[in-house]
Image (cartoon, rainbow, N blue to C red; front, top):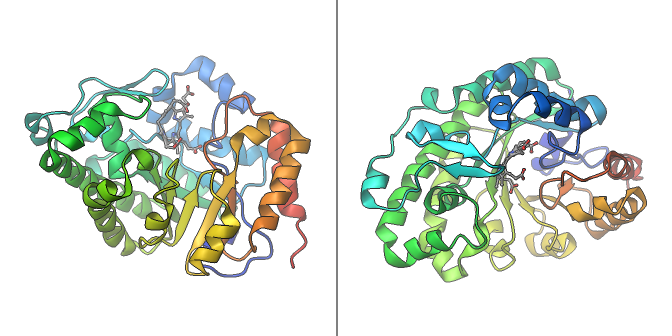
Length: 339
Ligand code: CP3
């Protein structure tokens, strides 16, 4: 059983640092692009056999230490009664902006939330047969709300920030519903075989600290309290929020994952050994080719001790990434001489 990641997430020593890559099952892989000529993204993610196949694609090519289930941040959203399409990012059929909109959201039980994801997880678990850990994931309530309120991705998500300014009670009601959704969805993924879970707070950084503390933090605290009992390590990914990293690191997750802007050595010094740290090579470094990737990866490993470090990129791998750069990153990690 390759449980390197699970051990690192628990802060235990491992013979080498574990590694996986955010968006590892994606468009930089020629075999993924080939599948996409036949199927729309939504159909790939919505079909458990195909989703399982896509989840396994990067592991057929690279000795990665985890598989992350091929789904989307928005996969649980149809269970609320909302329509979502992809163009290429998520687009809601109708944004959620009024009290009536929030009241109208369904409150699905676990079995009703993205059942195709649970079937896919069971397929992948069987196929992995212990070769790598299986990761489940969900969006944070705030990052889900960003798409629901704005209606689609938009720089700075102004409609979301306007709603916070206009009606804090409405935002709290929405975040409460999304927290319950995420707790049930993650619970179902663990029941279906996920060995660890990542909570993506991609749009964490939109609010100043004081507003984040009032508006977002209480829901994250509940999410983490209610997923602790699942008994699997939880990785909390915070993106583009340097002013909030300290506050996220103080929350009750086993690991904090940060984007490439953060200095992991300094973060390790501030955190002590209380948390695993995941990250954070700049995905753009890989675009510069294998030699630049090798230098970047060596510098990353040199910046913090191996104990409790899960190597990853600082955000999703870019579609233009050369395969050779991915291999170079993996080689550096596999060739590190333990100190
Ligand atoms: O990491 C993995 O390999 C698992 C699969 C995964 C996808 N989306 C597949 C996907 C994961 C973990 C996600 C999460 C996700 N989706 C996030 C959080 C992570 C992050 O990037 O910060 C967000 C913000 C989304 C929303 C989303 N979905 C966007 C903005 C887009 C379009 C742009 C893009 O990056 O591709 C999607 C579509 C999407 N989700 C694709 C994939 C592989 C591309 C679809 C395609 O093949 O055209």
